[in-house]
Length: 419
Image 1 (cartoon, one colour):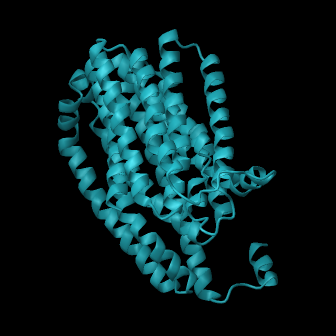
Image 2: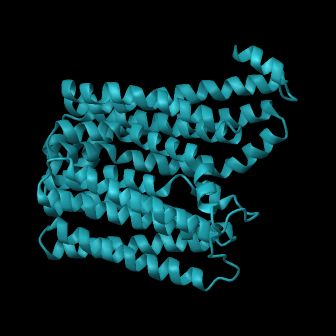
Image 3: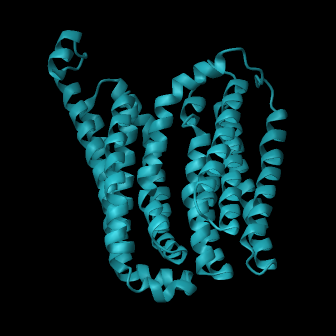
Protein backbone atom coordinates (compact mmCIF):
# COMPACT_ATOMS: atom_id res chain seq x y z
CA UNK A 1 0.00 0.00 0.00
CA UNK A 2 2.85 2.40 0.82
CA UNK A 3 4.55 1.90 -2.55
CA UNK A 4 1.20 2.30 -4.29
CA UNK A 5 0.58 5.60 -2.48
CA UNK A 6 4.08 6.82 -3.37
CA UNK A 7 3.57 5.94 -7.04
CA UNK A 8 0.13 7.58 -7.15
CA UNK A 9 1.41 10.73 -5.46
CA UNK A 10 4.39 11.09 -7.81
CA UNK A 11 2.18 10.52 -10.84
CA UNK A 12 -0.22 13.27 -9.74
CA UNK A 13 2.60 15.59 -8.67
CA UNK A 14 4.40 15.17 -12.03
CA UNK A 15 1.75 17.03 -14.05
CA UNK A 16 1.88 19.98 -11.63
CA UNK A 17 5.68 20.08 -11.61
CA UNK A 18 5.97 19.83 -15.39
CA UNK A 19 3.46 22.57 -16.17
CA UNK A 20 5.13 24.92 -13.67
CA UNK A 21 8.56 24.12 -15.13
CA UNK A 22 7.49 24.65 -18.74
CA UNK A 23 5.91 28.04 -17.97
CA UNK A 24 9.03 29.11 -16.04
CA UNK A 25 11.62 27.86 -18.55
CA UNK A 26 9.90 28.05 -21.95
CA UNK A 27 7.42 30.86 -21.37
CA UNK A 28 3.67 31.25 -21.02
CA UNK A 29 2.74 30.42 -24.63
CA UNK A 30 4.74 27.18 -24.50
CA UNK A 31 3.17 26.52 -21.09
CA UNK A 32 -0.29 26.77 -22.62
CA UNK A 33 0.64 24.38 -25.42
CA UNK A 34 2.08 21.88 -22.97
CA UNK A 35 -0.88 22.16 -20.59
CA UNK A 36 -3.28 21.23 -23.39
CA UNK A 37 -0.98 18.54 -24.82
CA UNK A 38 -0.16 16.83 -21.52
CA UNK A 39 -3.11 17.31 -19.16
CA UNK A 40 -5.97 17.54 -21.65
CA UNK A 41 -5.65 15.90 -25.07
CA UNK A 42 -2.78 13.57 -24.15
CA UNK A 43 -4.64 12.43 -21.05
CA UNK A 44 -7.79 11.94 -23.11
CA UNK A 45 -5.87 9.64 -25.45
CA UNK A 46 -4.59 7.80 -22.39
CA UNK A 47 -8.22 7.16 -21.50
CA UNK A 48 -8.88 5.83 -25.01
CA UNK A 49 -5.90 3.48 -24.77
CA UNK A 50 -6.73 2.59 -21.16
CA UNK A 51 -10.21 1.44 -22.28
CA UNK A 52 -11.45 1.49 -18.67
CA UNK A 53 -10.20 -2.06 -18.34
CA UNK A 54 -7.98 -1.94 -15.26
CA UNK A 55 -10.76 -2.43 -12.65
CA UNK A 56 -11.90 -5.47 -14.64
CA UNK A 57 -8.36 -6.89 -14.85
CA UNK A 58 -7.40 -6.48 -11.19
CA UNK A 59 -10.64 -8.11 -10.03
CA UNK A 60 -10.32 -11.03 -12.47
CA UNK A 61 -8.66 -13.15 -9.79
CA UNK A 62 -10.27 -16.33 -11.15
CA UNK A 63 -8.29 -15.89 -14.38
CA UNK A 64 -11.21 -15.69 -16.79
CA UNK A 65 -8.87 -13.86 -19.15
CA UNK A 66 -5.10 -14.27 -19.43
CA UNK A 67 -2.50 -11.53 -19.36
CA UNK A 68 -2.08 -12.19 -23.09
CA UNK A 69 -5.75 -11.35 -23.62
CA UNK A 70 -5.48 -8.08 -21.72
CA UNK A 71 -2.20 -7.09 -23.34
CA UNK A 72 -3.41 -7.99 -26.83
CA UNK A 73 -6.52 -5.84 -26.46
CA UNK A 74 -4.48 -2.99 -24.96
CA UNK A 75 -2.12 -3.05 -27.96
CA UNK A 76 -5.10 -2.49 -30.23
CA UNK A 77 -6.58 0.32 -28.11
CA UNK A 78 -3.15 1.99 -27.91
CA UNK A 79 -2.76 1.83 -31.70
CA UNK A 80 -6.23 3.35 -32.10
CA UNK A 81 -5.37 6.15 -29.65
CA UNK A 82 -2.21 7.02 -31.58
CA UNK A 83 -4.08 6.98 -34.90
CA UNK A 84 -6.93 9.09 -33.53
CA UNK A 85 -4.45 11.55 -32.04
CA UNK A 86 -2.67 11.91 -35.37
CA UNK A 87 -5.94 12.51 -37.23
CA UNK A 88 -7.06 15.07 -34.63
CA UNK A 89 -3.80 17.00 -35.03
CA UNK A 90 -4.02 16.94 -38.83
CA UNK A 91 -7.57 18.29 -38.74
CA UNK A 92 -6.50 21.32 -36.68
CA UNK A 93 -4.53 24.26 -37.96
CA UNK A 94 -1.67 23.94 -35.48
CA UNK A 95 1.87 25.15 -36.04
CA UNK A 96 4.43 22.40 -36.70
CA UNK A 97 5.91 22.83 -33.23
CA UNK A 98 2.57 22.68 -31.44
CA UNK A 99 1.51 19.65 -33.49
CA UNK A 100 4.77 17.88 -32.65
CA UNK A 101 4.44 18.60 -28.93
CA UNK A 102 0.86 17.31 -28.85
CA UNK A 103 1.82 14.15 -30.75
CA UNK A 104 4.78 13.43 -28.45
CA UNK A 105 2.53 13.79 -25.41
CA UNK A 106 0.03 11.40 -26.99
CA UNK A 107 2.84 8.85 -27.43
CA UNK A 108 3.99 9.47 -23.84
CA UNK A 109 0.50 8.84 -22.47
CA UNK A 110 -0.11 5.81 -24.69
CA UNK A 111 3.07 4.16 -23.39
CA UNK A 112 1.74 4.94 -19.92
CA UNK A 113 -1.48 3.10 -20.80
CA UNK A 114 0.51 0.13 -22.11
CA UNK A 115 2.49 -0.01 -18.87
CA UNK A 116 -0.79 0.06 -16.96
CA UNK A 117 -1.57 -3.43 -18.30
CA UNK A 118 1.57 -4.77 -16.63
CA UNK A 119 0.90 -2.86 -13.43
CA UNK A 120 -2.65 -4.24 -13.28
CA UNK A 121 -1.21 -7.74 -13.71
CA UNK A 122 1.18 -7.12 -10.81
CA UNK A 123 -1.79 -6.13 -8.67
CA UNK A 124 -3.91 -9.06 -9.84
CA UNK A 125 -1.09 -11.37 -8.81
CA UNK A 126 -0.99 -9.93 -5.29
CA UNK A 127 2.13 -7.79 -5.86
CA UNK A 128 0.76 -4.29 -5.45
CA UNK A 129 4.17 -2.99 -4.40
CA UNK A 130 5.49 -3.71 -7.92
CA UNK A 131 2.69 -1.57 -9.32
CA UNK A 132 3.70 1.33 -7.10
CA UNK A 133 7.40 0.91 -7.85
CA UNK A 134 6.80 0.86 -11.60
CA UNK A 135 4.65 3.98 -11.43
CA UNK A 136 7.16 5.77 -9.22
CA UNK A 137 10.34 4.86 -11.10
CA UNK A 138 8.90 5.47 -14.57
CA UNK A 139 7.60 8.87 -13.47
CA UNK A 140 10.91 9.89 -11.89
CA UNK A 141 12.91 8.79 -14.94
CA UNK A 142 10.74 10.46 -17.58
CA UNK A 143 10.24 13.69 -15.59
CA UNK A 144 13.96 13.98 -14.83
CA UNK A 145 14.87 13.49 -18.50
CA UNK A 146 12.22 15.97 -19.66
CA UNK A 147 13.33 18.69 -17.24
CA UNK A 148 17.03 18.12 -17.95
CA UNK A 149 16.58 18.42 -21.72
CA UNK A 150 14.16 21.35 -21.40
CA UNK A 151 16.66 23.27 -19.25
CA UNK A 152 19.66 22.25 -21.34
CA UNK A 153 18.09 23.37 -24.62
CA UNK A 154 16.81 26.69 -23.31
CA UNK A 155 13.16 25.68 -23.37
CA UNK A 156 12.90 23.70 -26.63
CA UNK A 157 9.66 21.90 -25.92
CA UNK A 158 9.72 19.59 -28.95
CA UNK A 159 13.17 18.24 -28.07
CA UNK A 160 12.19 17.75 -24.43
CA UNK A 161 8.98 15.99 -25.47
CA UNK A 162 10.89 13.56 -27.71
CA UNK A 163 13.34 12.84 -24.88
CA UNK A 164 10.49 12.23 -22.44
CA UNK A 165 8.90 9.69 -24.81
CA UNK A 166 12.23 7.86 -25.09
CA UNK A 167 12.62 7.83 -21.29
CA UNK A 168 9.04 6.61 -20.86
CA UNK A 169 9.68 3.74 -23.28
CA UNK A 170 12.90 2.82 -21.45
CA UNK A 171 11.11 2.93 -18.09
CA UNK A 172 8.33 0.71 -19.43
CA UNK A 173 10.88 -1.87 -20.56
CA UNK A 174 12.96 -1.75 -17.36
CA UNK A 175 10.24 -1.58 -14.72
CA UNK A 176 7.40 -3.50 -16.37
CA UNK A 177 8.47 -5.82 -19.19
CA UNK A 178 11.60 -7.18 -17.48
CA UNK A 179 9.91 -7.45 -14.08
CA UNK A 180 6.94 -9.42 -15.43
CA UNK A 181 9.31 -11.83 -17.19
CA UNK A 182 10.76 -12.71 -13.80
CA UNK A 183 7.35 -13.61 -12.34
CA UNK A 184 6.07 -17.18 -12.53
CA UNK A 185 2.64 -18.35 -13.67
CA UNK A 186 1.85 -15.44 -15.98
CA UNK A 187 -0.13 -16.68 -18.98
CA UNK A 188 1.07 -14.65 -21.97
CA UNK A 189 -0.81 -16.52 -24.69
CA UNK A 190 -4.22 -15.47 -25.99
CA UNK A 191 -6.71 -17.88 -27.49
CA UNK A 192 -8.69 -17.02 -30.57
CA UNK A 193 -11.75 -14.90 -29.87
CA UNK A 194 -10.82 -14.04 -26.29
CA UNK A 195 -9.81 -10.44 -27.00
CA UNK A 196 -13.15 -9.87 -28.74
CA UNK A 197 -15.01 -11.24 -25.71
CA UNK A 198 -12.94 -9.00 -23.44
CA UNK A 199 -13.72 -6.04 -25.67
CA UNK A 200 -17.45 -6.66 -25.40
CA UNK A 201 -17.27 -7.09 -21.62
CA UNK A 202 -15.73 -3.63 -21.23
CA UNK A 203 -17.30 -1.53 -24.00
CA UNK A 204 -19.86 0.21 -21.77
CA UNK A 205 -17.27 1.03 -19.13
CA UNK A 206 -14.96 2.36 -21.87
CA UNK A 207 -17.52 4.84 -23.19
CA UNK A 208 -18.32 5.90 -19.63
CA UNK A 209 -14.65 6.68 -18.96
CA UNK A 210 -14.30 8.62 -22.24
CA UNK A 211 -17.41 10.68 -21.49
CA UNK A 212 -16.27 11.25 -17.91
CA UNK A 213 -12.96 12.74 -18.99
CA UNK A 214 -14.57 14.80 -21.74
CA UNK A 215 -16.95 16.36 -19.21
CA UNK A 216 -14.02 16.97 -16.84
CA UNK A 217 -11.98 18.61 -19.63
CA UNK A 218 -14.72 20.30 -21.68
CA UNK A 219 -13.84 23.75 -20.34
CA UNK A 220 -10.16 23.18 -21.25
CA UNK A 221 -11.08 22.23 -24.80
CA UNK A 222 -13.19 25.38 -25.00
CA UNK A 223 -10.35 27.56 -23.68
CA UNK A 224 -7.91 25.99 -26.18
CA UNK A 225 -10.33 26.48 -29.06
CA UNK A 226 -11.49 30.01 -28.28
CA UNK A 227 -8.54 31.73 -26.60
CA UNK A 228 -4.75 32.13 -26.91
CA UNK A 229 -2.12 29.64 -25.70
CA UNK A 230 -1.15 31.95 -22.82
CA UNK A 231 -4.79 31.90 -21.63
CA UNK A 232 -4.58 28.12 -21.63
CA UNK A 233 -1.50 28.43 -19.40
CA UNK A 234 -3.40 30.65 -16.97
CA UNK A 235 -6.40 28.32 -16.93
CA UNK A 236 -4.09 25.34 -16.41
CA UNK A 237 -2.53 27.13 -13.43
CA UNK A 238 -5.83 27.76 -11.65
CA UNK A 239 -7.00 24.25 -12.61
CA UNK A 240 -3.93 22.65 -11.01
CA UNK A 241 -5.34 22.37 -7.46
CA UNK A 242 -8.02 19.95 -8.70
CA UNK A 243 -5.27 17.31 -9.02
CA UNK A 244 -4.56 17.65 -5.31
CA UNK A 245 -8.27 17.49 -4.46
CA UNK A 246 -8.73 14.33 -6.55
CA UNK A 247 -5.67 12.73 -4.97
CA UNK A 248 -6.83 13.48 -1.42
CA UNK A 249 -10.39 12.38 -2.21
CA UNK A 250 -9.02 9.11 -3.60
CA UNK A 251 -7.14 8.48 -0.36
CA UNK A 252 -10.36 9.15 1.57
CA UNK A 253 -12.75 7.10 -0.59
CA UNK A 254 -10.82 4.09 -1.87
CA UNK A 255 -10.04 2.44 1.49
CA UNK A 256 -13.80 2.22 2.08
CA UNK A 257 -14.73 0.64 -1.25
CA UNK A 258 -14.29 -2.96 -0.09
CA UNK A 259 -16.31 -2.23 3.06
CA UNK A 260 -19.05 -0.52 1.05
CA UNK A 261 -19.22 -3.51 -1.30
CA UNK A 262 -19.47 -5.95 1.61
CA UNK A 263 -22.18 -3.93 3.38
CA UNK A 264 -24.26 -3.65 0.19
CA UNK A 265 -23.93 -7.34 -0.64
CA UNK A 266 -24.96 -8.20 2.92
CA UNK A 267 -28.20 -6.27 2.37
CA UNK A 268 -27.64 -3.50 4.93
CA UNK A 269 -28.81 -0.28 3.21
CA UNK A 270 -28.98 1.72 6.47
CA UNK A 271 -25.32 1.06 7.24
CA UNK A 272 -24.42 1.73 3.59
CA UNK A 273 -26.17 5.10 3.86
CA UNK A 274 -24.27 5.98 7.04
CA UNK A 275 -20.94 5.21 5.35
CA UNK A 276 -21.86 7.29 2.29
CA UNK A 277 -22.95 10.24 4.45
CA UNK A 278 -19.80 9.98 6.57
CA UNK A 279 -17.55 10.10 3.51
CA UNK A 280 -19.64 12.93 2.03
CA UNK A 281 -19.21 14.87 5.28
CA UNK A 282 -15.43 14.44 5.12
CA UNK A 283 -15.43 15.68 1.51
CA UNK A 284 -17.64 18.59 2.57
CA UNK A 285 -15.28 19.58 5.39
CA UNK A 286 -12.30 19.42 3.05
CA UNK A 287 -14.26 21.53 0.55
CA UNK A 288 -14.83 24.31 3.10
CA UNK A 289 -11.11 24.37 3.88
CA UNK A 290 -10.14 24.25 0.19
CA UNK A 291 -12.55 27.00 -0.90
CA UNK A 292 -11.55 29.23 2.01
CA UNK A 293 -7.88 28.65 1.30
CA UNK A 294 -8.39 29.31 -2.42
CA UNK A 295 -10.16 32.61 -1.78
CA UNK A 296 -7.58 34.03 0.63
CA UNK A 297 -4.32 32.28 -0.32
CA UNK A 298 -4.86 30.65 -3.74
CA UNK A 299 -3.79 33.48 -6.04
CA UNK A 300 -0.70 34.52 -3.98
CA UNK A 301 0.50 30.90 -3.81
CA UNK A 302 -0.08 30.30 -7.52
CA UNK A 303 1.68 33.60 -8.25
CA UNK A 304 4.76 32.28 -6.46
CA UNK A 305 4.64 29.00 -8.39
CA UNK A 306 3.89 30.60 -11.76
CA UNK A 307 5.93 33.81 -11.59
CA UNK A 308 5.55 34.39 -15.35
CA UNK A 309 1.76 34.40 -14.99
CA UNK A 310 1.51 36.48 -11.83
CA UNK A 311 0.11 39.51 -13.63
CA UNK A 312 -2.67 37.45 -15.28
CA UNK A 313 -3.63 35.52 -12.15
CA UNK A 314 -4.68 38.60 -10.13
CA UNK A 315 -8.06 38.71 -11.89
CA UNK A 316 -8.75 34.97 -11.46
CA UNK A 317 -9.72 34.70 -7.79
CA UNK A 318 -13.42 34.03 -8.51
CA UNK A 319 -12.53 31.58 -11.30
CA UNK A 320 -10.13 29.71 -9.00
CA UNK A 321 -12.77 29.46 -6.27
CA UNK A 322 -15.31 28.10 -8.78
CA UNK A 323 -12.82 25.48 -9.98
CA UNK A 324 -12.02 24.42 -6.40
CA UNK A 325 -15.74 24.06 -5.72
CA UNK A 326 -16.07 22.08 -8.97
CA UNK A 327 -13.22 19.83 -7.87
CA UNK A 328 -15.07 19.13 -4.63
CA UNK A 329 -18.23 18.24 -6.58
CA UNK A 330 -16.06 15.95 -8.70
CA UNK A 331 -14.82 14.19 -5.55
CA UNK A 332 -18.40 13.78 -4.37
CA UNK A 333 -19.38 12.49 -7.81
CA UNK A 334 -16.64 9.84 -7.59
CA UNK A 335 -18.08 8.65 -4.28
CA UNK A 336 -21.50 8.23 -5.89
CA UNK A 337 -19.95 6.72 -9.03
CA UNK A 338 -18.23 3.97 -7.02
CA UNK A 339 -21.46 3.40 -5.11
CA UNK A 340 -23.37 2.83 -8.35
CA UNK A 341 -20.68 0.45 -9.61
CA UNK A 342 -21.00 -1.50 -6.35
CA UNK A 343 -24.75 -1.60 -6.95
CA UNK A 344 -24.07 -2.98 -10.47
CA UNK A 345 -25.73 0.01 -12.17
CA UNK A 346 -23.24 0.50 -15.02
CA UNK A 347 -25.95 1.28 -17.56
CA UNK A 348 -27.28 4.09 -15.42
CA UNK A 349 -23.74 5.44 -14.98
CA UNK A 350 -23.34 5.57 -18.75
CA UNK A 351 -26.72 7.27 -19.13
CA UNK A 352 -25.74 9.89 -16.53
CA UNK A 353 -22.48 10.63 -18.31
CA UNK A 354 -24.31 10.87 -21.62
CA UNK A 355 -26.84 13.34 -20.23
CA UNK A 356 -24.23 15.62 -18.66
CA UNK A 357 -21.99 15.18 -21.74
CA UNK A 358 -24.71 16.84 -23.83
CA UNK A 359 -24.81 19.69 -21.32
CA UNK A 360 -21.01 20.02 -21.62
CA UNK A 361 -21.27 20.42 -25.40
CA UNK A 362 -24.00 23.02 -25.02
CA UNK A 363 -22.45 25.31 -22.39
CA UNK A 364 -18.63 25.05 -22.49
CA UNK A 365 -17.93 26.93 -25.73
CA UNK A 366 -20.59 29.65 -25.27
CA UNK A 367 -19.53 30.27 -21.66
CA UNK A 368 -15.87 30.72 -22.65
CA UNK A 369 -16.79 32.94 -25.60
CA UNK A 370 -18.93 35.11 -23.32
CA UNK A 371 -16.77 35.33 -20.18
CA UNK A 372 -13.35 33.88 -21.04
CA UNK A 373 -11.51 32.08 -18.23
CA UNK A 374 -14.30 32.87 -15.74
CA UNK A 375 -16.77 31.26 -18.17
CA UNK A 376 -14.64 28.12 -18.37
CA UNK A 377 -14.49 27.89 -14.58
CA UNK A 378 -18.24 28.42 -14.30
CA UNK A 379 -18.93 25.73 -16.90
CA UNK A 380 -16.64 23.29 -15.07
CA UNK A 381 -18.37 23.96 -11.74
CA UNK A 382 -21.84 23.49 -13.25
CA UNK A 383 -20.88 20.23 -14.99
CA UNK A 384 -19.31 18.71 -11.87
CA UNK A 385 -22.31 19.74 -9.77
CA UNK A 386 -24.67 18.24 -12.37
CA UNK A 387 -22.81 14.91 -12.36
CA UNK A 388 -22.77 14.80 -8.55
CA UNK A 389 -26.51 15.55 -8.47
CA UNK A 390 -27.44 12.94 -11.10
CA UNK A 391 -25.36 10.17 -9.52
CA UNK A 392 -26.29 11.17 -5.96
CA UNK A 393 -30.02 11.07 -6.69
CA UNK A 394 -29.58 7.66 -8.32
CA UNK A 395 -27.64 6.29 -5.33
CA UNK A 396 -30.26 7.34 -2.80
CA UNK A 397 -33.08 6.09 -5.04
CA UNK A 398 -31.56 2.61 -5.13
CA UNK A 399 -30.88 2.71 -1.38
CA UNK A 400 -34.57 3.48 -0.83
CA UNK A 401 -35.48 0.65 -3.21
CA UNK A 402 -33.23 -1.71 -1.27
CA UNK A 403 -34.94 -0.75 1.98
CA UNK A 404 -38.38 -1.26 0.50
CA UNK A 405 -37.56 -4.53 -1.24
CA UNK A 406 -34.70 -6.11 0.74
CA UNK A 407 -34.98 -9.36 -1.19
CA UNK A 408 -35.14 -7.67 -4.61
CA UNK A 409 -38.05 -6.91 -6.90
CA UNK A 410 -40.00 -9.40 -8.91
CA UNK A 411 -39.91 -8.78 -12.64
CA UNK A 412 -43.59 -7.78 -12.68
CA UNK A 413 -43.05 -5.24 -9.87
CA UNK A 414 -39.95 -3.86 -11.57
CA UNK A 415 -41.76 -3.42 -14.89
CA UNK A 416 -44.62 -1.67 -13.09
CA UNK A 417 -42.22 0.80 -11.41
CA UNK A 418 -40.42 1.53 -14.68
CA UNK A 419 -43.67 2.13 -16.54
